Image 1 (cartoon, rainbow, N blue to C red):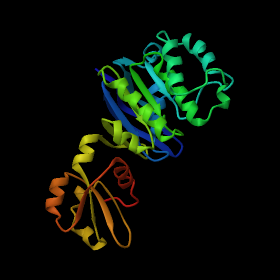
Image 2: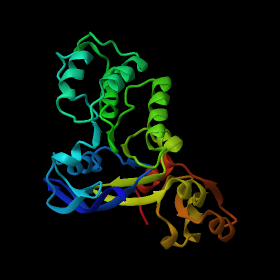
Image 3: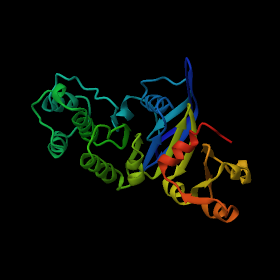
Image 4: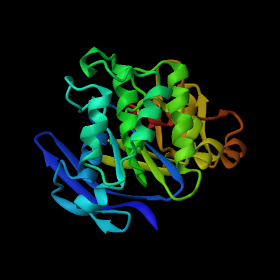
Length: 282
């Protein structure tokens, strides 16, 4: 069973359209959702949880239509802390325990202690990074099967980020849980993601296994006059300046053989995103 299925999700605002977004998350996987600001990541996440009502398409979570019952099995972390800032972590333990059927006070308070969060200080005194840790502790404390995370490691130092990423890996390793992680920190996805989704201007431009992306995609480099050597149908995205060009292609081994005069390098998630968003397309 897939943890999440989107089929043809559309949403139109003045000046922006989320267009026919379809993808699925298998259990036991972490999927990274990336794109520049305004690409549609947050609208996609809000469509999943029902805080935005799509104009078309469908969402299924754990095999069910969106509803209150299924949301008991979903943990959510937004890019901004959504808890009342007059509360303390201890207050939250009581409040959220009345909301979630599977809430575990021991798990929540244990995660707070592990993350170094004070239990008796008001949330308004917390830094952004501390608020993100608190949100993650709360998302994990009711034993969800699906985590939806919007910039969860924003504001965290490298050590704290590593702790969070380790927790996400442990969360899915039994094969019965899944994570959708929206982030600008592509190095986090290099480390833990199984699949990469890239949104651009409201369209899903790429849905690919991370291993395939890193092993089979490539960047061809050369001088501007060499650009005409390329078959434009093989170019997924590119950019150039007065002295050189970079072109994103698939099938690295075949490209290296076909274009021996060009430099053919492996790529990474950030570079794929940049080239797909290049100011010049084929």
